[in-house]
Length: 142
Length: 142
DNA sequence: ATAGGATCTGTAGTAGCTACAGGTTCAAGG
DNA sequence: CCTTGAACCTGTAGCTACTACAGATCCTAT
Image (tube, rainbow over all chains, first blue to last red):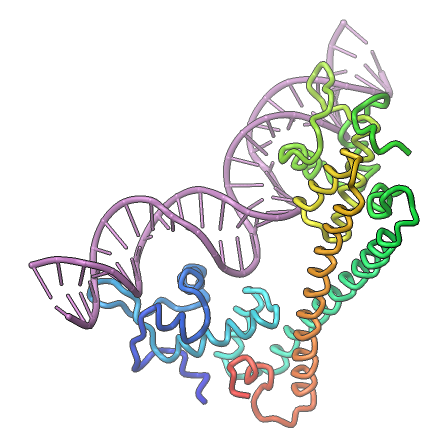
């Protein structure tokens, strides 16, 4: 597959088609164009957007990266690296490593929350405390 | 401790003090007031906000709940329940149970991301593939 | 020719803050 | 009493990543 070829050729998909093919909704596609994540496509005579194969690839990339929780800025950087194919692997890896650390930090935070919540809900359930254990916890009385 | 007494009495803390005592920053305190999460406090002659003990409690509650990832709407509901002390425990518990499910779903999502990221980064590291495995993954070629 | 679906632009809304600008007040020291 | 500088005031705009309109135009099939 040719990642280099993100410029366009061939098929002229209207936005609705691109949306269906990528699972990315129409407003989001226009949004990505507005913020410069997706290049402006050709237009029909009447002004409708017509996308080519490169757009399909690029949008697919963006969607998969979003699915992995990369921010739009990170994705912008990755797309840059994918285009200037010189020393991209180490740098792309670096972006991913940083992001992975982020993800792990979030997991740790959420697990801490989960532990407190689960324990508190359990205490609520047993009905042995006069006042609501959840509220007591939140009021900092415990 | 009296959760009922969220109305105010006694100490007249200026906003900076309240901020320091709760660890909640000043702009956020004013924001909470604007959206009705924190009642409007008394004012000095010159118009400076003066907070009492009830505000301290309530803001502490909000902060702890935020720390557990409750949304502001959930917190609003919990505060309501804490005030109308009739049948709050079951309902408060319900809010927490729903939230706990949310947190668990987020953890599951993040773990899935983590797995893919970690694996991909590893493949980048071993240098055995000609192209960048991360980029290949994002382009959907693998 | 026309109907109705697809698309267009532009603006505003979501959560939960944060960051100003440009002004006023408060409290302590002289 | 006066001054200074910190603290405070209001109001607006910004952030992320979208989503949801309104009101207009285009495209395609009959």
